[in-house]
Amino acid sequence: MTENDMAQKSQRSHQISLPQGEVEKAPASTDPVVATGLIAVKDPAYEKPVFRRDASSGIKPFEEIDRDLGNALKETRKVTGLSREAIAELVGLSTPVYGRYERGFSSLTVTRLIHLCEVLNIGPEEMIFSVAPHLYGVSQEEAEERYATFSMVRKLDVDTLKLVRQLLEQVRPSSPASSSESELK
Image (tube, rainbow, N blue to C red):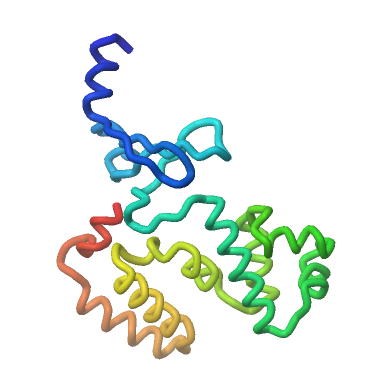
């Protein structure tokens, strides 16, 4: 990259601060990652910047997500009436290792999350919504509406589900994506 290219790149970027470190606005580009409006976040847990949405829209640092996911896991376990020891045994872990998940000291893998959802008899969306509602809408209200609707639809029998799908196909927006879906992309 030439000095001129670097100067132009610098002019297209601006910096903001987040609790987890410095953030740099991704330069204007035809790159699909950059075109989504993501910003490079310099997270202390990673050597290289990772791309995420702007924190001003309610995005939590990864460390906070791990902690909140652990709290949600703990609350869900308590609702089921199972002890930490019982859950640990059901998922093939020692109690201290499982406890690290509940305290947010260890990050859950997708496979571990799926296994825990099977054991706790919940859908993964219940855990994910509790820590990342921004994935469900551009505003808190929209996210809550989508999640509540999704939760209701999830419990329907297959015949009712088919009817709901037919209804949704009739009221689907004329554009390929709704306004909020476009904003999320």
